[in-house]
Image (tube, rainbow, N blue to C red; front, side):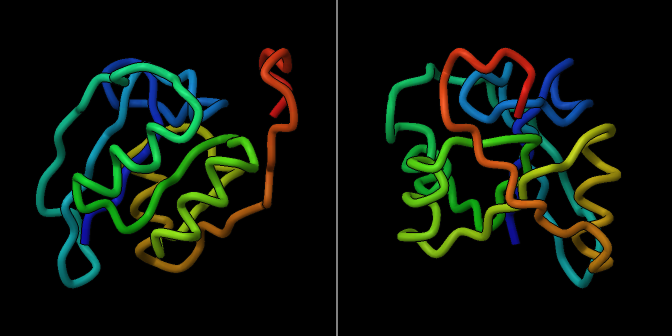
Length: 118
């Protein structure tokens, strides 16, 4: 399974807002463990683009600090699980997801002027 983490610092930290992240840490997982990781720079924030971009990469789960409702809707339409409200180390967030301890808080950003509020 592929798990993407919207991240900063070349994939080390979970970002506060999905669309404005530096890029995505893409984790390959199998049998409840991480088998590989790559960092993909954010190709640009345009409404509706990033969910489709990650879907085309085969991502099945997206983890972020916050995310707009439109992006969440597109991910849901694609059958991609959305986990928001995460913070800290990206790899620890993925391990938490795999162990069942990381749960979505439903942190939805409603405006693009929010700075770090979501």
